[in-house]
Amino acid sequence: MYCDIAEGMVFRPPSEANSFILRVTIGCAHNRCTFCGMYRDVAFRMRSYPEIKRQIDYAAQAVPQLRRVFLADGNALCLKNDLLLKIMADLKQSFPKLSRITCYGGPNDILRKSPAELSALKEAGLQIIYLGIESGDDAVLTSICKGADAAGMVEAGRRVLGAGIKLSAMVILGLGGKERSSQHAINSAAVVNAINPTMLSALTLMLHEGTPLRDAADRGEFQPLSPYEFVLEIKEFVSRLDLAHPCIFRANHASNLLPLAGTLPADKQALLAQINYGLEVLKGKTTPTYNDRGTF
Image 1 (cartoon, rainbow, N blue to C red):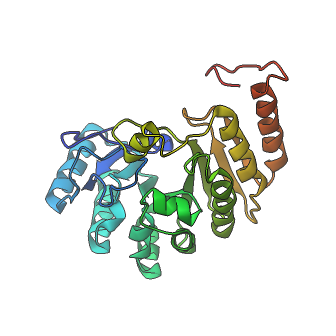
Image 2: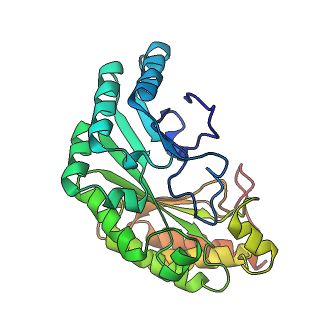
């Protein structure tokens, strides 16, 4: 359920398709990542409590049996804890069947919260934070203007988990281009290993029009991977994952050529077997069996 799209497009993780999207901020405070075009058409601002309360009241009248809420846009955690706690208290009061509250969490927004503040959010009902690691390679993180380094990503992820909040982390295949494909895969796996998130997603880089990275590619300054190279990169990435605790792994986003799903570390070898099959198909050494999405 979406509410209020007057200020730009509304975005949410795929797993929040059935959630009420409560926009507590508008846009993204950072909004400089070279690959991202999500919030380039809207100025960032924090919404006032009366604005937010009006959204809650509207949704409570329209869908009183609501069970899930996603706090949007890109920077819900930049709000002060007192306001976030007040919002979550209102949500619990307005929706008796509410079962979970989630949000995006930029690494710097997370690090500005103390462990005690994150624990308070957990106690108030915040169950999942979605962290875009993007890459564990510092050179790639600098080139895409992420505003954080690998060490900061690790600390942010660990801080979320330390508060008892589930962490859904994401990396983007191909973000290092041809030049840093191997380093991107190796160092991203190292960061994921150091965090051991609850959930992990691997998306494939899409060069969206109007983004600096697309412009760089059009000028020949960034060399995107071929389909075969994308699959080689995820093989390198998955082969280097060494997680101590179970992690739900997904690489079945619409952007992914080779859809993968499993639980790590238990399904690592099965996932690698699927990847090797995909490489054989791309080399033309075997005939693919397609699924209903047209991917193999």
